[in-house]
Image 1 (spheres, helix red, strand yellow):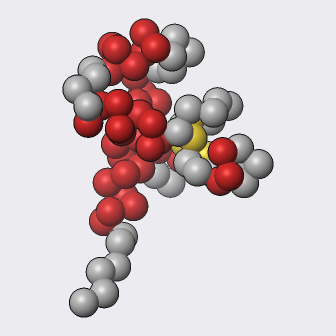
Image 2 (cartoon, rainbow, N blue to C red; image 1 turned 180 degrees about the vertical axis):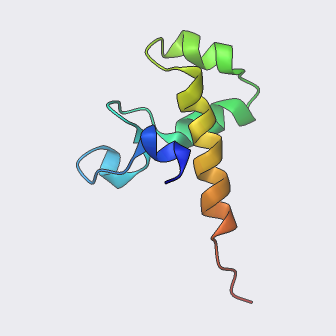
Length: 74
C-alpha cells in the first residue's frame, strides 16, 4: 500500500471526488497550487492549522504517482 493512502482520500461526496486530505475539504490540488506559488509547508500549516507535515508530503507522493501512471497519447 502506498503511504499517501493513509492521508489522501477520494470521496464523490466531498469536492466532487477530488483527492483531499482525509477528514477535510482541503484538496491535493490546493496544496500543490499554493506551493507552486511560493508557499512553504509552514505557510500552509499556518493557513490550515489542522494539517500535518506528513499530509502535505502525501500530496507530493500522490501527485508523483498519478503522473508516473499517466498515459500520453501521441
